[in-house]
Length: 96
Image 1 (spheres, one colour):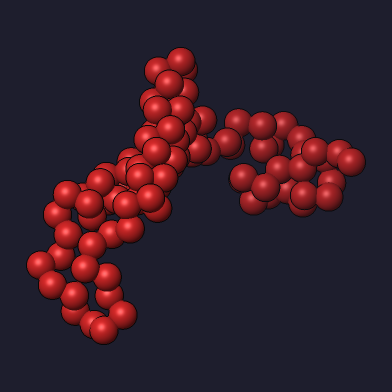
Image 2 (image 1 turned 180 degrees about the vertical axis):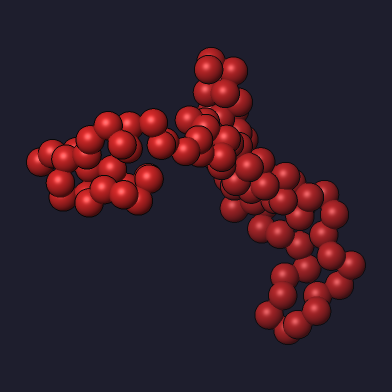
C-alpha cells in the first residue's frame, strides 16, 4: 500500500502524496516521549494514591459498603505495580 498524507489535509490517504505534503508535519505534544510521560503519570498516581490510602485512611466510612481501611495486600500490590511503571518511565525518559 502506498503512503498517504493525513496531516496537511490536502492529500487522500489512499493515493500517494507528493511534495506538497512533505513539509507539513505537526509536532506532537511531548513529542516521541508521550508514552513514557503517560506511564509516569499513571504509575505515579497509582503508587502515591494507594500509599496515601494506607497512611491516611478516611476518618469514617461514608456508606454501608465502604471499608474502614484499605486492604493491605491489594494496596501493596498496586504500590509495587505503580512504582515499577514509574521507574520504567523515568529510565526511558533519561535514556532519551
